[in-house]
Amino acid sequence: MQLADRVNRISISPTAAVLAAAERYRAQGVDLADFGPGEPDFPTPDHIKRAAIRALDENRTKYTPTAGIGPLREAICRWHAAQFGSSYTVPECVVTVGGKHAIFNAFCSLLGAGDEVLIPAPYWVSYPDMVMYTGATPVPVMTDPSDGFRLRAEQVARAITPRTKLLIVNSPSNPSGAVVPPDEFARIYEVCRAKNIWLMTDECYSHFLYGKEKPFSLASLPGTKPNIIVAGSLSKTFAMTGWRVGYALAPEPLISAMIKLQSQSTSNATSIAQYAALEALTGPMDTVAVMLAEYARRRDRIVAGLRAIPGVTCTEPGGAFYAFPSVAAHLGNGVADTTALAKQLLERQHLVVVPGDAFGTPGYIRISYATSIDRIEEGLRRLEKFFAMAESAT
Ligand code: PLP
Image (cartoon, rainbow, N blue to C red; front, side, top):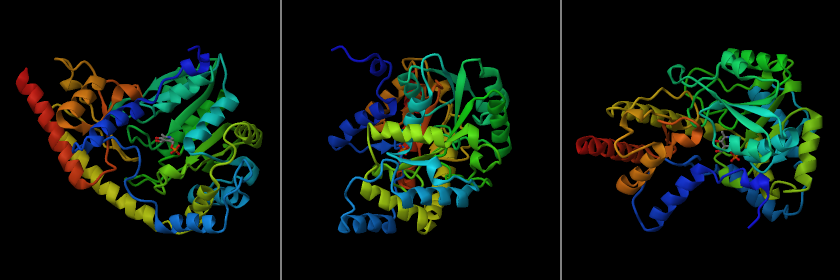
């Protein structure tokens, strides 16, 4: 079949491919230890669910304005101001079908053939494909494992060419958990501003922080607004991945372009989900703290467990809910790369991990700790057993 070039340029998300393979085992009743999930294992808080039920009862089931219901756009601006100190207004805000949609629509509205987009590696798997879909070229910017994969302004400066149009920064990062310190973020912004380059900040994991840092947005720094795009999501912070609500905050002409694009494609995000999101952003946030305390406990356990396995090294992730250990010492001898390793771990130990190759960093695997301490212990046992067996076979 002759498909369009733009769709032939991209591939199905490799994380989705791993999770689909795991699903086949699960369907056969296999007891999987699952370090794959890219979503909280907590349910959506009750008060948010009740708001959706109320919206249904009140028949709020019709089209809404493309950009989202007015009260939600206002709530997003107010919540962002309260959490981070930004100053966006409703015309600078659009409600999208998840954070992914915000990023995709912003890319489609800004990028085209000849443009280059800087993507710090390790990166979220979707960025390069979304860039390629627009006809632009993704340019990976390698970060340093010995620096905890934190992006540095000098690394950005070195990668800029006359064609560079945009840099995307995801802090805390999926997959490494790296957090860019605010002062470094400001330096990175300055490098971009001086060259008239857009900086998109993907704040999907903004609240998942385990160190001393407070949630931070570049939008809190005075004067940044004209050059930055905030991509936000309710998915992780409020355990709402399936509801599909996200947003973008950006200069009004760009938001207008994104609304225009949305008006000819998805239209509005689901009406009921928007009312649930309104409750999430205006109601109590105490469940977020409860969730974070549990993630902090799991992070400590998993990092200690990984470091105890011979040949595995792991920097401490400052945020998100992933550990990103190096298993390079275990490659070779029939396991060519981490894609092959992930396949063997699934087949032989029924352990699900995501290969680092997918994130632009061969030699690493992504371990999600969005699972219970019991399952973390079980997964660690299986990982250790796999490497010990491989070792004794050589
Ligand atoms: N950005 C990053 C780094 C992610 O990991 C994800 C989801 O996994 C998203 C954005 C998009 O999330 P959603 O579309 O559910 O808001």
